[in-house]
Image (cartoon, rainbow, N blue to C red; front, top):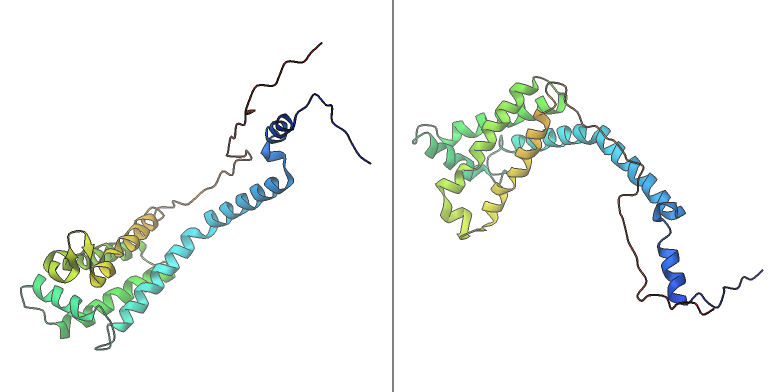
Length: 202
């Protein structure tokens, strides 16, 4: 079966008519909207749990490394930072095991969701200490202004960990993520004819 269009309808006019059809009514777009809505709902349900567990694993992992001399890449800078912070009174032989226990405690508290207020407090203090080398040893953390070395990048990325911990802090008193998946297509596309249609001749 074939269909023919009136001769008065030009090709560009037909193109505009098709594009002005609401995109949310297209089957493929409807499917994508549904998938997006389900994805957002899943992230709202599980995002905070994934964030908490991943932070916990990172702290346990990096903390365990500090128990063994020469394994952790942050061992030297951490030891020198604490040594300078304490005016030379706490040697790395003492500070590194304490730091390892500190980080593992944070990780376990996050992983098992115990004493979160205290756990996050320890985390905030530890994170504050990780940024001190940027101030204490700028010649090692920056090669030029706003150009961090590999060590500097290793330290600066802790901003992400700190931000994640702040988000978790909002859940201590029952806060949670909620989702209100709108059923409206979020994009509003307006199409117009490239030129005005010629007046019909009578």
